[in-house]
Length: 126
Image 1 (tube, rainbow, N blue to C red):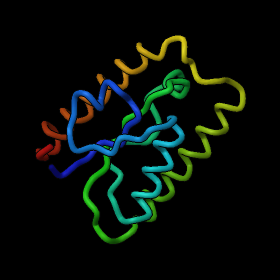
Image 2: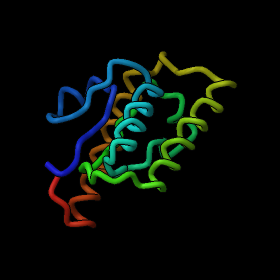
Image 3: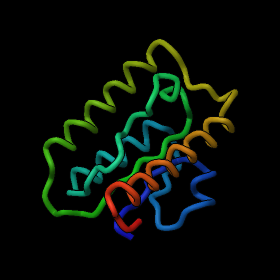
């Protein structure tokens, strides 16, 4: 597998193998991805969700690539800015635990779409 998933989503954990499962929050997932990027791992999917509403999800799944052994400054900037934006947005509003099960399903569906897009449009082996 050329890609791995970094997630804290229990639905994703049940459905996929060979992933980084983070026991923690959405922010913890972002921090794990940041650590991987600083080790030279490629950032494949954007760290933040497609909508503002998804920022209040307790779950997040992010696709990362292989370790290129060189740190990409653009990927560093993306993940650092994502962490700052996430923290800034949660100052005004808290995580929506009431709808956690729905968010888990949505996150899983978004992940499936990302993986399919990689396979179809970029002819990549997942």
